Length: 138
Image 1 (cartoon, one colour):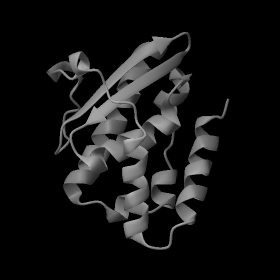
Image 2 (cartoon, rainbow, N blue to C red; image 1 turned 180 degrees about the vertical axis):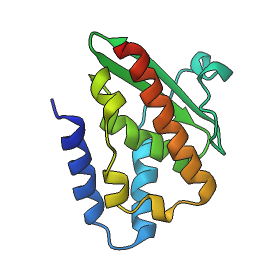
Image 3 (tube, rainbow, N blue to C red; image 1 turned 30 degrees about the vertical axis):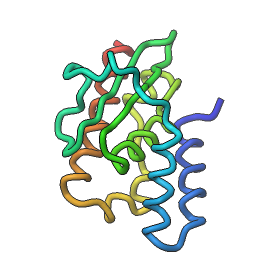
């Protein structure tokens, strides 16, 4: 199974394929479309990520030493962003998720191309995923 670092490298390579930011946004949207929808009963306020402009629901559960993530969002870009984070973090050791450096976000230039509110949402998603991982690693 690929490590968090290896999964980030794959994403960087995918994004290098695109020259224009509109194409990169479209790729993020496509990633969101491939994300399995969260069952309606899990779309509750307890799973809402605080700090996101749109509604993003994030569910995590422990699977041995690993963390499994499921998510959904009511906005296509937010859903794509959370799908990208799940690509990196899903089914990885909780301790590694909690300690992960997400350098790929800088490398693909995502932070520079998000509005301040979306950038805050991205940070909130990461913080919530790491919070779950830390709780499971404890």
